[in-house]
Length: 255
Image (cartoon, helix red, strand yellow):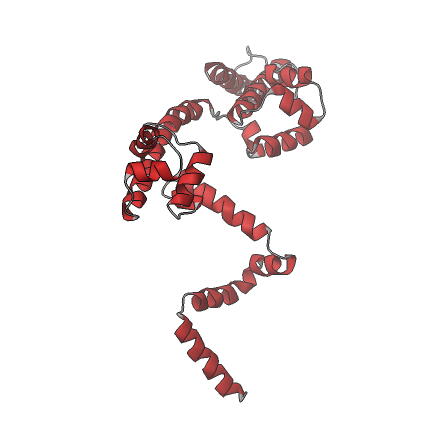
């Protein structure tokens, strides 16, 4: 991060020196275009490496995707060589960043440190939440800890650690627990945080993409919002109200 800030400040100084030369305010300073290009390359290299690390990709992964050798990626990140715009567009897609990131002045490094810390807190909180849901549902079903443990062939002491949130419950064991408690795995999913919102959005997007082409096209057309809102309103009505509406429509049409 400090290297990038140094490159950025030196580049800004080079630009200001160039403006000073052009305005005639300082005839002693001479703009060096090669130095300016070199600094631009170094800055881009830092941004490339930063985006790759943020996406948790190796240089070999990037090289394989772009069909170049790993040495080329390393040269880009060191600022010894510079990729073309089409390369950057592919990189932006592969690393899941906006392409404008590569000509900006902001890195993900500081945010990465915060996210790493937040991940541990998230895991601890989610373990406690899942454990509380298991215990609450078990008690609602009238099962003791030992009765549930015996039902799913799991050591009661281990199950107790799961319920306390002290240990992370492996997915295959959570699946058995949820089945024994007559709940689906989705019952234990996170829904209250940014991560939960993102996961829910991805699930919705998956279901949207699985729709037939004509329905997907209809839903994606802004001119059809009114029809969708009507369908939503109908979906919220009770079956009795829907029957009355259907009878009224038959009366109107004479069928």
